[in-house]
Image (cartoon, rainbow, N blue to C red; front, side, top):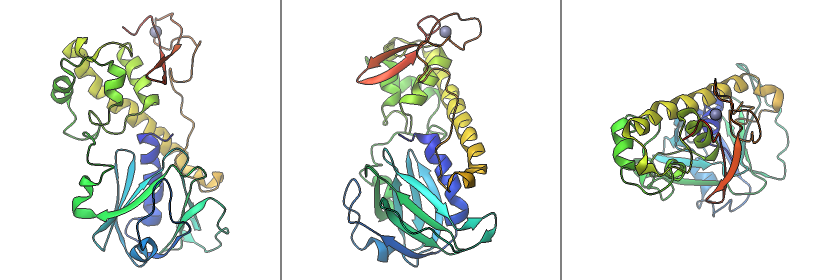
Length: 283
Ligand SMILES: [Zn+2]
Protein backbone atom coordinates (compact mmCIF):
# COMPACT_ATOMS: atom_id res chain seq x y z
CA UNK A 1 0.00 0.00 0.00
CA UNK A 2 1.51 3.32 -0.98
CA UNK A 3 2.43 5.56 1.93
CA UNK A 4 3.10 9.29 1.95
CA UNK A 5 6.56 9.13 0.27
CA UNK A 6 5.20 6.98 -2.57
CA UNK A 7 2.24 9.31 -3.08
CA UNK A 8 4.55 12.34 -3.04
CA UNK A 9 6.75 10.61 -5.62
CA UNK A 10 3.71 9.99 -7.82
CA UNK A 11 2.71 13.65 -7.48
CA UNK A 12 6.18 14.83 -8.51
CA UNK A 13 6.14 12.45 -11.45
CA UNK A 14 2.78 13.83 -12.59
CA UNK A 15 3.78 17.50 -12.24
CA UNK A 16 5.39 18.00 -15.68
CA UNK A 17 2.49 16.28 -17.42
CA UNK A 18 -0.34 17.92 -15.47
CA UNK A 19 0.36 21.13 -13.59
CA UNK A 20 -0.50 24.22 -15.59
CA UNK A 21 -1.87 22.12 -18.42
CA UNK A 22 -5.39 21.65 -19.75
CA UNK A 23 -7.08 18.26 -19.61
CA UNK A 24 -8.04 18.07 -23.28
CA UNK A 25 -10.12 14.95 -22.89
CA UNK A 26 -11.09 12.76 -19.96
CA UNK A 27 -12.17 9.18 -20.51
CA UNK A 28 -13.94 7.69 -17.49
CA UNK A 29 -14.23 4.02 -18.33
CA UNK A 30 -16.37 2.72 -15.48
CA UNK A 31 -18.91 4.17 -13.03
CA UNK A 32 -17.06 3.35 -9.83
CA UNK A 33 -13.79 2.54 -8.13
CA UNK A 34 -14.04 1.86 -4.41
CA UNK A 35 -17.03 4.19 -4.42
CA UNK A 36 -19.12 5.59 -7.29
CA UNK A 37 -17.26 8.19 -9.34
CA UNK A 38 -18.85 11.67 -9.28
CA UNK A 39 -21.66 12.29 -11.79
CA UNK A 40 -20.58 13.83 -15.08
CA UNK A 41 -16.93 13.37 -14.14
CA UNK A 42 -15.60 13.27 -17.72
CA UNK A 43 -17.44 16.49 -18.64
CA UNK A 44 -16.34 18.22 -15.45
CA UNK A 45 -12.68 17.40 -16.18
CA UNK A 46 -12.53 17.96 -19.92
CA UNK A 47 -11.29 21.41 -20.92
CA UNK A 48 -10.16 22.30 -17.41
CA UNK A 49 -6.68 23.59 -16.66
CA UNK A 50 -4.92 21.99 -13.68
CA UNK A 51 -3.91 25.10 -11.75
CA UNK A 52 -2.07 23.23 -9.03
CA UNK A 53 -1.20 19.62 -8.25
CA UNK A 54 -0.69 19.19 -4.53
CA UNK A 55 -0.79 16.52 -1.85
CA UNK A 56 -2.66 16.16 1.43
CA UNK A 57 -1.65 13.07 3.40
CA UNK A 58 -1.92 10.16 0.93
CA UNK A 59 -4.24 12.06 -1.42
CA UNK A 60 -3.27 13.86 -4.61
CA UNK A 61 -5.33 17.00 -5.21
CA UNK A 62 -5.62 18.59 -8.65
CA UNK A 63 -7.11 22.09 -8.36
CA UNK A 64 -8.98 22.87 -11.58
CA UNK A 65 -9.73 26.23 -13.19
CA UNK A 66 -13.45 25.47 -12.72
CA UNK A 67 -13.12 25.84 -8.94
CA UNK A 68 -13.36 22.11 -8.38
CA UNK A 69 -10.60 19.84 -7.09
CA UNK A 70 -10.01 16.33 -8.38
CA UNK A 71 -9.13 14.15 -5.40
CA UNK A 72 -7.14 11.00 -6.18
CA UNK A 73 -6.47 8.14 -3.77
CA UNK A 74 -4.35 5.25 -5.00
CA UNK A 75 -5.79 2.80 -2.46
CA UNK A 76 -4.07 -0.59 -2.27
CA UNK A 77 -3.18 -1.18 -5.89
CA UNK A 78 -3.86 2.02 -7.82
CA UNK A 79 -1.13 3.10 -10.24
CA UNK A 80 -0.61 6.24 -12.26
CA UNK A 81 1.05 5.91 -15.64
CA UNK A 82 2.33 8.67 -17.88
CA UNK A 83 2.84 7.97 -21.54
CA UNK A 84 3.65 10.02 -24.60
CA UNK A 85 5.97 12.52 -22.95
CA UNK A 86 9.68 11.99 -23.40
CA UNK A 87 12.03 14.52 -21.85
CA UNK A 88 10.57 17.66 -23.33
CA UNK A 89 9.74 16.07 -26.66
CA UNK A 90 6.16 15.05 -27.05
CA UNK A 91 4.69 12.41 -29.24
CA UNK A 92 1.34 10.77 -29.41
CA UNK A 93 1.75 7.04 -29.68
CA UNK A 94 -0.19 6.02 -26.60
CA UNK A 95 -0.77 2.35 -25.90
CA UNK A 96 -4.38 1.18 -26.16
CA UNK A 97 -6.14 1.26 -22.76
CA UNK A 98 -5.84 -1.96 -20.83
CA UNK A 99 -8.46 -3.79 -18.83
CA UNK A 100 -7.84 -2.02 -15.54
CA UNK A 101 -7.21 1.46 -16.99
CA UNK A 102 -10.21 3.15 -15.42
CA UNK A 103 -9.58 6.87 -15.96
CA UNK A 104 -7.53 8.25 -18.86
CA UNK A 105 -6.60 11.94 -19.13
CA UNK A 106 -5.20 13.29 -22.39
CA UNK A 107 -3.26 16.40 -21.46
CA UNK A 108 -2.33 19.51 -23.33
CA UNK A 109 1.32 18.94 -24.27
CA UNK A 110 0.74 15.39 -25.43
CA UNK A 111 1.04 13.36 -22.26
CA UNK A 112 -1.55 10.78 -21.34
CA UNK A 113 -2.15 10.13 -17.64
CA UNK A 114 -3.77 6.78 -16.86
CA UNK A 115 -5.16 5.57 -13.55
CA UNK A 116 -4.97 1.79 -13.43
CA UNK A 117 -6.33 -0.17 -10.48
CA UNK A 118 -6.84 -3.94 -10.70
CA UNK A 119 -8.46 -4.28 -7.28
CA UNK A 120 -10.34 -0.99 -7.30
CA UNK A 121 -9.61 0.08 -3.72
CA UNK A 122 -8.64 3.48 -5.10
CA UNK A 123 -10.96 6.47 -5.21
CA UNK A 124 -11.55 9.67 -7.12
CA UNK A 125 -13.92 12.51 -6.38
CA UNK A 126 -14.63 16.09 -7.40
CA UNK A 127 -15.24 18.67 -4.70
CA UNK A 128 -15.25 22.49 -4.52
CA UNK A 129 -11.64 23.62 -4.01
CA UNK A 130 -12.70 26.19 -1.42
CA UNK A 131 -14.03 23.50 0.93
CA UNK A 132 -11.94 20.48 -0.06
CA UNK A 133 -10.48 20.30 3.45
CA UNK A 134 -14.00 19.38 4.57
CA UNK A 135 -14.23 16.43 2.17
CA UNK A 136 -15.19 13.33 4.21
CA UNK A 137 -11.84 11.68 3.39
CA UNK A 138 -9.84 14.74 4.48
CA UNK A 139 -11.86 16.36 7.26
CA UNK A 140 -10.52 14.23 10.11
CA UNK A 141 -6.87 14.38 9.10
CA UNK A 142 -4.34 15.80 11.53
CA UNK A 143 -1.43 18.07 10.56
CA UNK A 144 0.95 17.27 7.71
CA UNK A 145 4.29 15.93 8.99
CA UNK A 146 6.19 18.65 7.09
CA UNK A 147 3.76 21.42 8.08
CA UNK A 148 4.29 24.04 10.79
CA UNK A 149 1.34 22.72 12.81
CA UNK A 150 3.21 19.50 13.40
CA UNK A 151 5.87 20.38 15.95
CA UNK A 152 7.35 19.24 19.26
CA UNK A 153 4.86 21.09 21.48
CA UNK A 154 1.93 19.77 19.49
CA UNK A 155 3.01 16.13 19.62
CA UNK A 156 3.88 16.21 23.32
CA UNK A 157 0.47 17.74 24.15
CA UNK A 158 -1.36 15.35 21.82
CA UNK A 159 0.18 12.21 23.34
CA UNK A 160 0.18 13.39 26.94
CA UNK A 161 -1.67 10.87 29.10
CA UNK A 162 -2.60 8.67 26.15
CA UNK A 163 -2.91 5.03 27.12
CA UNK A 164 -2.45 3.63 23.63
CA UNK A 165 0.78 2.08 22.29
CA UNK A 166 3.01 4.66 20.60
CA UNK A 167 2.77 2.78 17.32
CA UNK A 168 -1.02 3.03 17.37
CA UNK A 169 -0.81 6.74 18.18
CA UNK A 170 1.49 7.46 15.25
CA UNK A 171 -0.72 5.46 12.89
CA UNK A 172 -3.72 7.54 14.02
CA UNK A 173 -4.29 9.89 11.07
CA UNK A 174 -5.83 12.48 13.43
CA UNK A 175 -2.48 12.77 15.27
CA UNK A 176 -0.36 13.13 12.15
CA UNK A 177 -1.50 12.66 8.57
CA UNK A 178 0.06 10.19 6.17
CA UNK A 179 2.14 7.91 8.38
CA UNK A 180 1.61 4.21 7.68
CA UNK A 181 2.84 0.93 9.08
CA UNK A 182 6.17 0.77 7.25
CA UNK A 183 7.43 4.22 8.16
CA UNK A 184 6.18 4.10 11.75
CA UNK A 185 8.31 0.96 12.25
CA UNK A 186 11.30 2.80 10.80
CA UNK A 187 10.67 5.92 12.90
CA UNK A 188 10.36 4.02 16.18
CA UNK A 189 13.55 2.07 15.50
CA UNK A 190 15.48 5.25 14.83
CA UNK A 191 14.01 6.79 17.97
CA UNK A 192 14.88 3.74 20.09
CA UNK A 193 11.28 3.44 21.31
CA UNK A 194 9.53 0.06 21.52
CA UNK A 195 6.30 0.04 19.45
CA UNK A 196 4.22 -1.29 22.35
CA UNK A 197 5.27 1.43 24.82
CA UNK A 198 2.26 3.42 26.02
CA UNK A 199 2.37 6.89 24.50
CA UNK A 200 1.70 8.74 27.74
CA UNK A 201 4.48 6.85 29.54
CA UNK A 202 7.25 8.09 27.25
CA UNK A 203 9.29 11.07 28.46
CA UNK A 204 8.27 14.34 26.77
CA UNK A 205 11.84 14.83 25.57
CA UNK A 206 11.71 11.55 23.66
CA UNK A 207 8.23 12.27 22.24
CA UNK A 208 9.48 15.66 21.02
CA UNK A 209 12.43 13.88 19.41
CA UNK A 210 10.03 11.93 17.21
CA UNK A 211 9.14 15.05 15.20
CA UNK A 212 12.50 15.51 13.43
CA UNK A 213 12.90 11.74 13.07
CA UNK A 214 9.50 11.46 11.33
CA UNK A 215 10.50 14.24 8.94
CA UNK A 216 13.92 12.69 8.27
CA UNK A 217 12.56 9.22 7.59
CA UNK A 218 9.88 10.53 5.21
CA UNK A 219 12.26 12.95 3.50
CA UNK A 220 14.82 10.20 2.89
CA UNK A 221 12.12 7.98 1.38
CA UNK A 222 10.92 10.83 -0.84
CA UNK A 223 14.51 11.37 -1.89
CA UNK A 224 14.80 7.66 -2.78
CA UNK A 225 11.57 8.00 -4.76
CA UNK A 226 13.00 10.98 -6.59
CA UNK A 227 15.94 8.86 -7.72
CA UNK A 228 13.50 6.25 -8.99
CA UNK A 229 11.62 8.94 -10.96
CA UNK A 230 14.67 9.73 -13.00
CA UNK A 231 14.49 6.33 -14.63
CA UNK A 232 10.78 5.63 -14.50
CA UNK A 233 10.79 5.77 -18.30
CA UNK A 234 12.47 2.39 -18.29
CA UNK A 235 9.69 0.91 -16.20
CA UNK A 236 6.82 1.65 -18.53
CA UNK A 237 5.94 5.10 -17.22
CA UNK A 238 4.65 3.78 -13.92
CA UNK A 239 5.12 6.20 -11.08
CA UNK A 240 5.75 5.89 -7.42
CA UNK A 241 6.88 2.40 -6.52
CA UNK A 242 10.52 2.22 -5.74
CA UNK A 243 13.03 0.01 -4.00
CA UNK A 244 13.80 1.49 -0.66
CA UNK A 245 16.14 0.01 1.90
CA UNK A 246 14.23 -0.26 5.13
CA UNK A 247 16.22 -0.70 8.32
CA UNK A 248 13.70 -2.88 10.15
CA UNK A 249 10.52 -3.25 8.08
CA UNK A 250 10.35 -6.75 6.57
CA UNK A 251 13.71 -7.67 8.10
CA UNK A 252 12.74 -10.22 10.75
CA UNK A 253 15.79 -12.18 11.94
CA UNK A 254 18.28 -9.69 10.49
CA UNK A 255 20.93 -8.10 12.71
CA UNK A 256 19.88 -4.72 14.11
CA UNK A 257 21.45 -1.94 11.99
CA UNK A 258 21.93 0.38 14.99
CA UNK A 259 25.70 0.90 15.44
CA UNK A 260 26.92 -0.98 18.49
CA UNK A 261 23.68 -2.96 18.95
CA UNK A 262 23.92 -6.74 18.66
CA UNK A 263 20.14 -7.29 18.72
CA UNK A 264 18.06 -9.13 16.13
CA UNK A 265 15.01 -7.65 14.40
CA UNK A 266 11.84 -9.26 15.67
CA UNK A 267 8.40 -9.33 14.08
CA UNK A 268 5.32 -9.07 16.24
CA UNK A 269 1.66 -8.45 15.54
CA UNK A 270 0.05 -5.35 16.99
CA UNK A 271 -3.58 -4.53 16.30
CA UNK A 272 -3.52 -7.01 13.43
CA UNK A 273 -0.49 -5.48 11.74
CA UNK A 274 3.13 -6.53 11.62
CA UNK A 275 5.60 -4.62 13.74
CA UNK A 276 9.33 -4.94 13.23
CA UNK A 277 11.59 -3.80 16.01
CA UNK A 278 14.80 -4.52 17.88
CA UNK A 279 14.02 -5.61 21.46
CA UNK A 280 17.54 -4.65 22.54
CA UNK A 281 17.81 -0.97 21.55
CA UNK A 282 14.11 -0.04 21.42
CA UNK A 283 12.73 0.55 24.90
ZN1 LIG B 1 19.04 -2.75 18.11
